[in-house]
Image: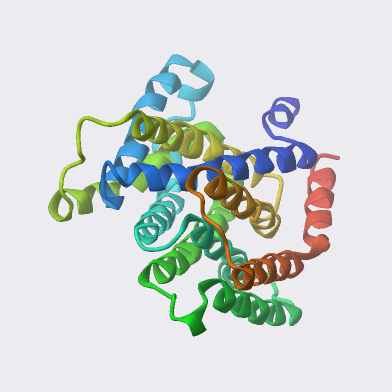
Length: 308
């Protein structure tokens, strides 16, 4: 029991880890935009996943405590989270071909609206009536941020909306699998393997080969996407979902949007219009309100009672 306790973060530590993960994913939006100069969405995602996988497997076999968890059961357990993760990043990357980093980051966080519905469907959790009000506010925010009246809604925004649905599925499926995960690191490596299958299968027939030689900026982007965004940040997600609920985790993931907006302004010079900032504000307010502080308190109580 003590050994297990040491492997899992406390809820307070989990919150700090998730904030750090959100900052990594915020930088990741910028890296994706830069890496698209090197390869299309399919090749780029296949490359990021399998670079991470090939690096991590020798680490697992070099560490006896990890090697014991490298088995068929954990491999199959990671299947659905991995496939939904693949869909999340394929649609997000494709969307960034047509929309801005800042818009993409705020549309992506609409997954927090979808999570409670999927929790109801898959985990049989109840949905509060007030949640439907928050959904309406978030949709209004989406209309502002995409400036539908001004005609700036584009295919990239739609692809990013599909990305948000995929992301919510990955979060909820991961919560469903969390009690069966014996090692967060090994599970993430298996998840990474599954996530790379679809983009690799689509890249070979449908996309031209990556452009070589690569620039320093592209090389830096691929390293960040493979090792920070994929190996480290998703490892943090798996660890923290062992002690926090899907709703709480998705609420903290909201921070990736302001991080992404800040980095997009800093490195890409992207600026929102006042109307779009109103939309971003509405999305964040509705998302935080839809989760509510009760979920966070429940996560703490569940963690505490489960260890007494």
